[in-house]
Image: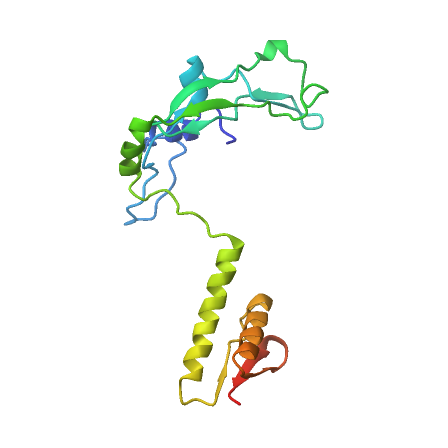
Length: 207
């Protein structure tokens, strides 16, 4: 996250708001209704489990600069989740650093927590978020199938029209071009690439 527990960014995440007199408050263009407010404040798993954030999560040194040691890593979760436990982390006085060292392969130490979504909170959570959670990202196959179907629809509409020829835009990528050639072949249409360079495109003709 690259901010410390006392920083304004931490307060924004954990309270959902940022005071206008904060030095970190962004400049907002006049008339713009946007403000740095979150839909939902987040709960820190470590704060919930142990009563405080870890003493440190990052212990690093860049060349001849002074070593840096502080907390930069968190596990933030929705307030509906129950924090069952959080992995205990060492105090800076017990760690030989800067990191990485043989026993710690990164300059950031591992943070981990066990979370639980109570069954009784499932409906409440769904209502609270009201579709604000991003929808599932389609798989590559699903995305490709959609592209194929859209291109096939264009070709079928061309076949049922009075037009003798049609062209696809030069902006098609290599995958889309291959799909057009394959579909045209399956549908018994003539297909050829014409033009040069950035103007090269696919022309379709009826037999």
